[in-house]
Image 1: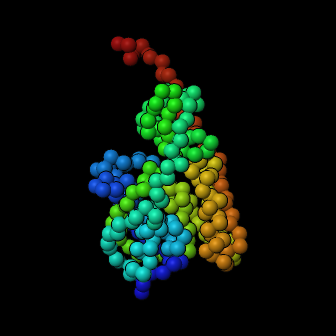
Image 2: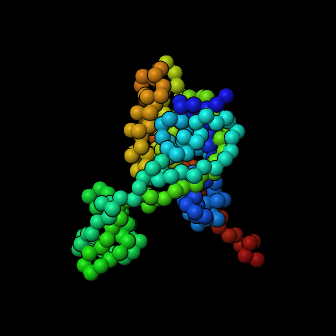
Image 3: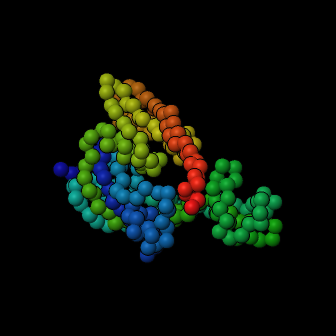
Amino acid sequence: MALQEGDFIRLRYTGRVGENIFDTTDEENAKEEGIYNPRAEYGPVTVRLGSHHVIIGLEDELIGKDVGAEGEVDVPPEKAFGAHEEDGVRSVPVTQFREKPKRGTRIEVEGREGVVVDVIGRRAVVDFNHPLAGKTLNYSYAILEKVEDPVEQIKGLIKLFSGRTDIEISIADGVAELALPPAIAYDRRWMVWRGTLVREIFENYPDINDVVMKETVSRPATPETAPEITEIEETEESEE
């Protein structure tokens, strides 16, 4: 049966600009291309079609396909990261930088991230467009399966948003309970995206009325007492 909006799928993909890979779910591809992130969780991702969990051009390609489909699609800028806007390029005084800027330096100004593309005198030219703005992208993909179990769907969303795979989930009586690992509050990515996760749970699961996030900290194990060592005095016989 053809996939439609609202379906959850497990997806494998690799995105390229020309011959260069910029995004992939395949660990070996990432290593070969020199974009491997040791902190990232590689492997197929779970996405909900219609929720823009992947760029629009790739999502449009997937809707209507069958499970098991593989293929490639070229995605124009208007269905990827948009056109490269001239007003997204600004001149910034070098005095705003902690260190002397140079080409390729990534900065944040007034909450916007950009990259220095040139330095002219006492001013740096900063491009605040997305690095892939204005570019046509190529995606190769494989639709591995349709995900039906709500618990697995939500686990997939957690991995998609936060990269975490260590959160257990149970759903009962209109309550989705998430068992959080200790110290998760120090995970900045989780803290940024957990609000989006909760919103999507309420949007996609009308039978869930409450989301409970429970962090359990267990008492540290008591260290075992080391056995006492008793010195044995040497006797006259042992000295002979």
